[in-house]
Image (tube, rainbow, N blue to C red; front, side, top):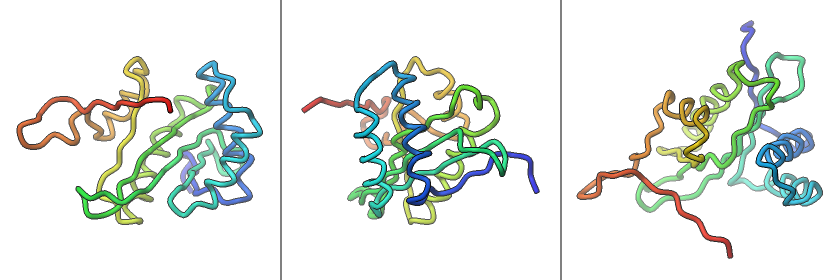
Amino acid sequence: MSGGPRVWRAQAQDAEDVARLLIAFRDWFEGDAPSEAAMRDSVSALIADPDTEFLLAATAPATAPAGVCQLRFRHSVWMSCDDCWLEDLFVEETARGKGLGRALVLAAFERAGTRGARRIELDTNEDNLGALALYESLGFSAASKAHGPLQGRDVFLGRQL
């Protein structure tokens, strides 16, 4: 048996661990919204959603999860199959540098492939150099959609409603 990280798909009984880690991610951003109760409710709803999966990672078989990854699936007209959106990836500070982030992304590739997706996308802040290095080392590119006359970087935009 390998001494590396253990990764598994979260089930309903894992909802509290998923919520705990996502709340820690919110806190890492120095935010206070959404509330812990709202996050727990959202996690419970999303675990039941067939188009959403959470992956959990632990540093060893008998340890509590210290990393989480959220995957969202939606059909793409351009790919004629599902796309996978890696919406959240977080590893507790005490577990960083132990391969959990990489293990979660590799497991995300496997889950996306199993579901028939041919593309996985994500966004991260350009100042998050550790995340950028991880994602680039695993083949992510800021020009993954480049085709035709447009060859520049992909730009993620958003707007609050």
